[in-house]
Length: 515
Image (cartoon, rainbow, N blue to C red; front, side):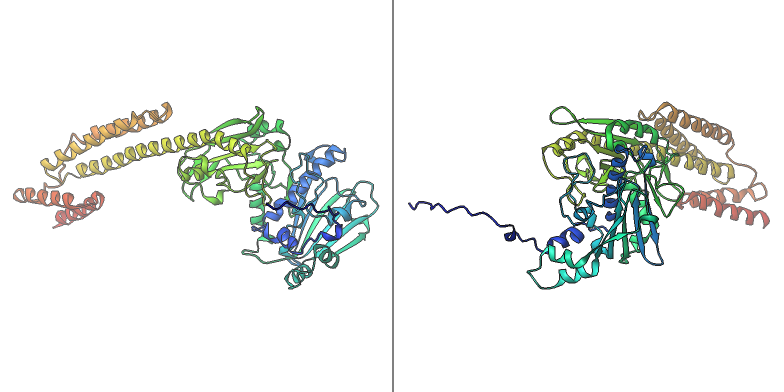
C-alpha cells in the first residue's frame, strides 16, 4: 500500500480568489423571475429602515413611517423612497457596492442576504440609489448603468470579474442635499423594460401585488382586520404594517381582504367567522401563529380576488404563492377554497433566496405537520358546504317544480287522471322538501328559513289542488272535451319543458275559444 505524502501547507493569496462576472447575472436576473418581486425587495428594505428610524428616535412610531412609490409614465421612471434611517455618507459606498454581505444577518430584520438591492438591475437601463442619514451634509448617489452591465455580461471574455464590471458600470456622486429629506433612502428605476402589460409601470398591477405581498394595513372596512391585527401585534415584526402610497394617493395600499368574496359578477359569499391557531416549535417555543376565515366555501376563489390560499408570511411579508402549503390539504382543490395566513416566527424556518419557498429542514416539516389538521378542517368545511348546497338545490328545484305543476292544475286543461298524477308528484316533492329541511348540517337559522318557505308552498298547494279544472271547456262541444284533454295530457307527457308545454296549450285554448 502506498503511503500518502504530506504536502506543505500554502497560504492563499487574496488575488487567488476570483469572483466571476456571472455572479452578477445570477443576483440581478436569475433570482427574480417575476418582475414585480423587485417591489417586494425594496419595500422590505424600506420597512427595515423605518423600524431602525423608530429605534433611533428619528420617527415617533412606524405610523409616521412612509414608503412612497411614484410612477412617471412620460419619462418612464419609478422612484421608491422611504423616510427610514437612511445610509450614512461614510457607509454608503461600501453598502452599495457589497454583494451578499448584509449587516442585517443575525438580526430580526426582514432582509439579511444583501442581494435584493440589485433585483431591478436586469429590468432597467439605469438603477440609481440615493441616501443620507441624520446629520449628513450631503446626499450620496450610486448609479448602475444596466446597459453596460448587460454588454459586459454578454461578452465572451471569461477573465472579467465582478470587480471590473462594478468599476465600469457604477458611478458615485455627491449631491446638494437641499431638495432631499434629512434622512431617507430611495431607489430610482430609469427606463424599465416593457414587460407584458408594462407591469413595472402599471399602477393597478403594482398595487395588487404590494397589497398581497407587502406589510400593508387592512382596510378599515374589513370587519376582521382589527381582530387579526390584535392577534399579531404582540409578535414583533409579524404584527407591523406600514403606509405605502402609490403616486401620492391619499389612502395607502390596503391588504386585499374584504367582507365578501366575489366568485363572479352575480355570485358572492360573505366571510362569517375567524379562527386563530398557534403552532409549537420542536423545542417548545412558538413556531408560527395563523388564522383562517370561514365562509360559504362555494368553490375555488378566483385568483383576481387576491385572497385565496393558506399563505405564509415572515415579518408580515409573504413567502411564495397561494399554493405554498398545498400538501397540507387532503385534496389539492381545497387549497384554492381557503382564506388564511401562517405567520412564521421560528427563525430557523428561513425563506430561500428568491423568497418563493422555505429552505427545507426539520423545523419547516414541523410546521407543515401541524398545518395538516388545519387543512383537514378546511376540507370538512368545504364538504359540509357542498352537502348543504346540494340539499338547498334539491329544495329549490322541488319548489320550482311544484309551482310549475300548480300552474298546470290552475290551467284546468288536463284530465282527472292526469291531474291526479300531478297531485301525487306534488306530494312526493313536498316530502322531499320536508326531508331536506331536516338535514342535520343546517343550523337553526337555516332550518327556520327553509321551513318558512315550505309552509308558504304547502299553503299554495292547499289553495290550488282543491279545484282541478275551470270553465275553459264550457264553450266547446261535450263530445270533443275528452279528446282535447287526452291531447293536452300527451303534450305534457311528451314535453321536456312543462312551462313551454303550458304556454303552447294556453295558445291552443285561446284559438279554440275564438273559433
